[in-house]
Length: 356
Image (cartoon, rainbow, N blue to C red):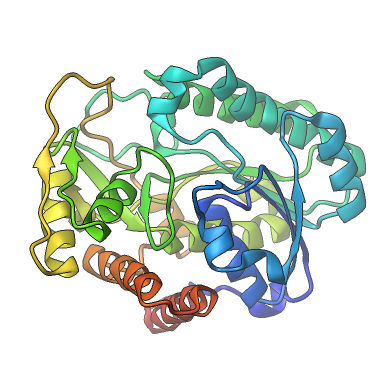
């Protein structure tokens, strides 16, 4: 698999949700590849963000806006005239979706519709990658990976809104001849340095460990497929390249999940993490009742492996090691833009060693 630097050099790329965790990693990678990046998103979290920590804004144009504001989004698209688009703007948290279901559906469904409608109006876009989630599948607790052909569903408002977003993309793709080539990308739980989102497992755990506390964990026996953010982001970049060149073949849904060796329980993950953190780091189970969350959901990414030559590059141990290294660098006062780019370069080096 190969990310083609010549393809990305000087390309006009729009990233929605660029102030978020994955959006920040993606924008830094695109900058590193030489793309001309514009982001459209809400202000970064005032409590702290990778976007601020790694000074992501210094290498791109940053537009603060809400995807629910169609007029502003349209003006931005008309000004930027992007060639490629990554749509990551979302309300991404399950527990927040229980608290704010209307906002979750408005952002995740109508935000996607607004973007596609704006892109239809300007034309000239060669590829759109709309990022959803592994939770778009109707989860039957199967002991096999879900494929792109499996039924969509969603128990909680977040999952359901993302499944609706998938349907909106499919509708636009089939209904409008002037809709740009658009694919959806489904990935699951990602980890990495700089994630500050509320109710994300590693974020809460590392915050507690950095403060010398023992974190309380809701569902230690729940099994999740874990991967570093750079793994699915690599898939998105490869997909955008191919979608731009062969839209009829690649304008569809794609899974980007980790290998089976990275399907471990929360408890197993935390044992690895606390060992890497060192000292007397430990965790405890949280008492009480908690909102419904899936206990088992895996992706079958064989299509991406076969047709994009993509597969996870970093093992779980490597992903955890680099995540801890990032947070330790932050504690040490290291320049975090440099540290984040160092990890991107490390990942690129590993990519070049992978067999085709």
